[in-house]
Each structure stands twice: as C-alpha cells, then as structure tokens.
Length: 230
Image (cartoon, rainbow, N blue to C red; front, side, top):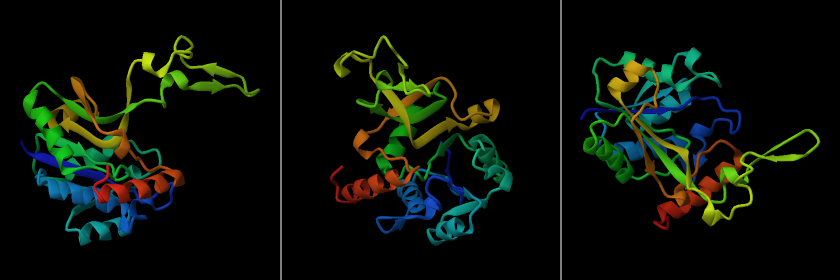
C-alpha cells in the first residue's frame, strides 16, 4: 500500500498567532507531527503544505519535503480539499491512501499510524478512518443555547436530566488523523467518505490547539507524554 502523508500548516492563525511554529516544551509545534510521521516509517511520501517561510525552514531542517501553498488556499476559511488537491497535482505518483496529520494535534504515537493503516488492510471496503475521542462530561446532553435575555434552552431536552451513566456514548473528532482512500478522495472531492470507521484515541492524550488555553494544556500534557506518563 502506497501512502501519502500531508501535514497542512498555514502561517496565519487568529486564536494563537504563529501557532504552528510556536515552541511547545522547547520544540516547534509542527515538528511533533513531522517527526512522528517520519519515525513511523509508513509513508512513501510525506509533505508539509504551507504558505509560511518559517514553516518551510523548519520542515527543511527536519528533512521533510514541503509545498508552497497557493495564497487562495491559505485563507482563514480555506477548505482542506483544495489544499489536498494542490498537493496531489504537484506529485507525479499516485497513492493508495492519504493520511492527513493536523499539526495542532501533536500527541500521537507511531503505533497510531500503523493501527490506522491496518484498519484499511483488514477491511478492503473501508473508505475513511477518522481519529476520535470519547466525550464524557462534555456531552451534547449538557449543552444549551442561550437567548439574549440569558434564558437557557437545552439542545436535547429529553436527555438533559439523565445521569452520565444513562447517556449514550458520543465521540468527537480530535484532529490527529484523517485517512482516506486516494481514489475515494479523487472521485468524491471530499476527505470523509463512507464506509467510514472511527479510530478511538485516549482522552488523556487529547489536545487540539486553537486557543491560548489549549497551548497551556498542551505544554502540560506533552511534558507528561515525554516522560511516558500518558
């Protein structure tokens, strides 16, 4: 199975300016994704797509290929599919599988990469695998809309008063992995296709950096992860 790894890393960010090059426990955030992908030994091609010269410099220092992204694909609201197509169009080869690794979800293991690939090998009908984590206290049953006069309206009134143990388990995408059959992506133009399966990751390793609070959490978690405590 020929596998293309893509790490999408814009230079711009409103929540955390320059987050993809921000030092997290002494290392640029994007370096975590590059190095885990490289250490897995699973990728026939690994490439960073970016509009930022600083990110290009970091990728180069880690011996990772890069593609300078078209500015039209580097806006705050730019969808990911044209970014992937831009990468595909730049390459002469074709692949069996595309794995997208968002740099904002830095806590991964090489075993995660291999487990996701194995899911496709065991189920040839599978088109997509997405990494998720289970939600416990952060559950839709505990969520509300609030009117201008501060009145609360439960999103799921029938579930509002149930105990956690009575609620159906729900999961959220954690941003660590999006894996798609190459041909499925090319034919559909979308990253998530059916049949699809979830790759469940531990909540303790869950961080997806989008705010200053997330940066603080990631610093603490990564320190413990490096010590082998997660």
